[in-house]
Length: 425
Image (cartoon, rainbow, N blue to C red):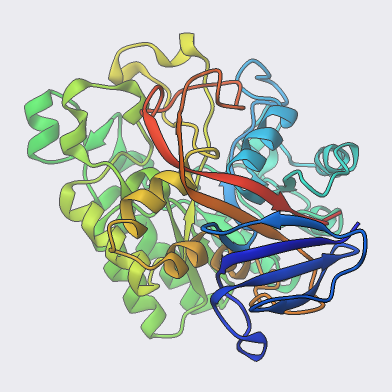
């Protein structure tokens, strides 16, 4: 059945079909059949969707998030993660191999794609498996990268710091001809030690063991040098310090093959928000100082930081309801990221709607080496529709995720995704 999305605010539309503005989009057979200020010629069976006041753009893509399944289904299953992603406007979600067992073999890659096949529905998010770079993500032995690439892995990462520099160099050498992204988290574990908060006055005042920014920047400098020497594209994940933004800016000025992303919570909170010791604000890397947060926000606005990742990390109530320094790091976010970021940055005028949407859709696609074209006639209808005026509350009953570890739980929200379209396999 054909569908007409009527009078939406269109984002990231090709100039030859009118560019951004208010208009209609006609979908037929899973593809965009027409884009125009007003479409009057319709198939007789067309379903008309009134989108006045809503924003329509390319489907959101989350670079990396974590599933509980397999190994910790009480935290999250593939099914609940798909439902959460769909509710949050994400048409694709990259799944980190931080499960048990990890995604380090062909059968584990196939298992994730079977989830997509079982949920063969144009209105559900699709999962994209990252393959582990090392067996069981232990950082000791490189996986069969070529086999995993052939099986459909979107790229390679352990989702954990890889501090063995000899192994890291071999990994980048082996991955180079495979033309798949390698996502690396710059963190020197020896320097980070047992810290749980960014080093500084706030951590000292709160009695929390600090992590200095050099834990990130020394490891990042190593990655930049490898990118210069080997020319293997590197995606720097979980950027969290102002100095890292400067280093990435300098690397890009030298045309090194580097892209970067920041987890969304680092754009919203900083060390000053830790005064209540909320375990849902315990992250790794830890939240930065106010200066770090501002540099990250500016980095996204400037394009130095290419993309915003959700880094959805579900934990049960029992796991997370402990002392701050004992809590496992991470929070959920697939259902919350778009509305919270929209209200914080777009509604306030700090960013344009296009800037935020790009950081959550086309730029993640570029980081993954996927097509990242503006919307145009003939392309698959992979779309997200947001109504920024809807008010709702992020209660446990309202959220689709099995876990509710978020500082936004029971908070009033404004903005909700009303529909997604995806025809991905």
